[in-house]
Image (cartoon, rainbow, N blue to C red; front, side, top):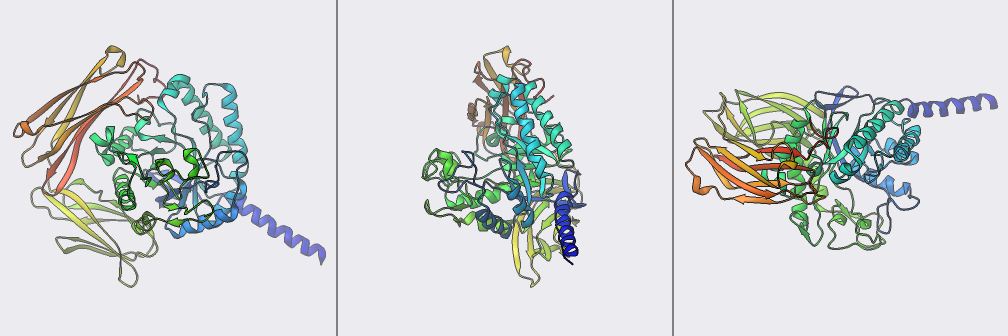
Length: 548
């Protein structure tokens, strides 16, 4: 009997181990989406760090596992409507086990130092060894759906250690991760504003940290179109996810970086979420779950005027508060994510009499209704949560600005969420206004000290230019975006072609420039931006790392 009991226990333990050792989630990347076990999966993630509570530093000394507190966090995150967490460094095996048990998925960072010497064999070996150490236990868990191998490498540093060194290191880490943990996509967390020039084709997924601070390209092209433009430049052949975005509620800041009210944070996150879906993102990781007091230098004090310490959806009342409490943005995001409108995109142009409908809903949503001018043009019961696709019939007369009102209902026919989507529709092709720029020097920054950006706007009847023309010369010097200009074009109203010319100094230590220009255009209630951008390198330093 004793032997039989021991055998039974051994079999049970073996089955538990096998459950972890043999991944049950099959990940596929196709149609620009993640597929988990054959189903389209929209990543509703949130940035999360353990060991970042008041009095803690997640990257100092021995990192605390804080398993009980982590259990609390994961429960809260799941109840908040998220299905994934994103980290900046690797979890321990005990932490991975908690994520597995929670039912959440994980985009896990590998803390490769972005300031390391990418071309140094010792640094490369250190990174490879870390990958092998982590994957030795991580491959037993199927909660991991993506690895992030580095976060926000700086342009100047890549220049100093060479673009080839950076690319070679990334490819080495990708190859090792694919070998050690097969079937898991690998990418990096590039920063959109400083990594726009970077060729990401060798990664499995496109990923960007992107903040709407109304500077540089986000000022000229608009947040949605700038990020969407990067996605287009990348090739539209792989899933695109956003690995950071958010608003800080520190007391002071500049632009939109800090100094936001609680309402501005909540409204800003919703607006960003909408824009990023419209830009083509199929995964969102806002920054982030709870304030990190450590970011300003003193982990025991919450610096009022340090924006980096106040991005949290949850905050802590004092140094003894280990659990925190939610801010308005937490509830706003929870409700917004119940039903995501993937298509039609907001501020999009459609020709014909049908438009594609794509939704991603949670279990509470049982019906969708779409109205135009208070009339129901579409109604459908939803039998399952997750991805849903169909088409909506419209009947535009001429060129028509249409605001579609979406209503989502629960099983008791109570409204769960509403959202409006603005489109410009016509049965035939629409001749839209166009903006183009000509930049000199346009091929090599070594060819001059002064840059010229010539802007040409081709106007169209019944379309109205709104506001000033914005021009940017983003020099990629650290976090500084470079000079910008605002040009009044009202005096050229009525002209078919409107032109402008702006000059900028080219710093000697500037290795890459993104020149861009844009202006808002209105048709009825429909407002969109027309824009153009050009990327110019200095010499051939970026042959390996830059866009071809």
